[in-house]
Length: 310
Figure 1 (cartoon, rainbow, N blue to C red):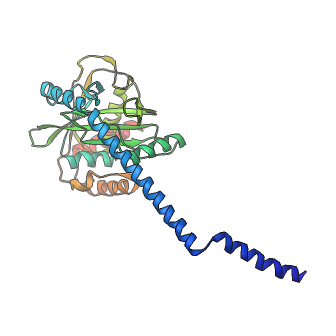
Figure 2 (figure 1 turned 120 degrees about the horizontal axis):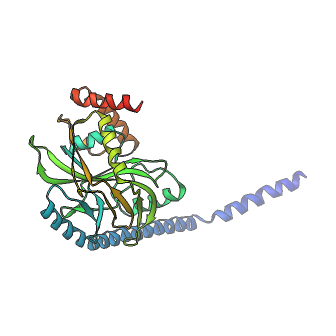
């Protein structure tokens, strides 16, 4: 029995060594694997470049139409436009703030800066949608005003990547009396992910009640303590029901909320990059630091809202 065992051990060892191959074979397999990985990366890069060029080419009409609309409506546009120049989401929010103040207020409210849409983020949002996972900084599809895509997009994630609150903002090129930027934005709620028939990339379907999302943005920003002024102005000017550029039906009372943020200094390069968990932690820490500097009016609004919600 011991003899058989002695014979088996060398035999098994020999087979394992043979299956491993010679050093030259191992080196060849390793080199081949590296070549395959490099080729896959090159293919991915080519796909990204081709997609970006296609999206840029398809966006020319949207750039042209949105620029023409800005000349007509100035700082009071009615809707944004998609890359084909088709009217899309309603512009239902206007905010007076610096870029840093705008981002700080949303960060303090638990919102994130959305990622840019590209091949990698599109693949991720596809898998996360299928698996029902969260993607706190998932990209938003580009919409256009003033001859360009949105300057900032903020979002508050839901239970999964399929649903979220989000808002796009554009610098109108005009300033308030105190010299700060006037921003206009469209706030909508995403309720599921679908594939765009234009770019064949994932995009979201919006909830039809866009006024509810406008109220969500208002409540979040008031709760942050940043709001020192609130008003309303006409957008459509009357109750309206129509479709956005993806064919999603929405209805609105035709109004736009106008908000003024507290005019306190913030570090814009940091505030405008609130992305992911680390960014959220930074935003919360920053909001605690600056909260004592927020005007009494903003803090009182936040306290009243908290009492009302309780």
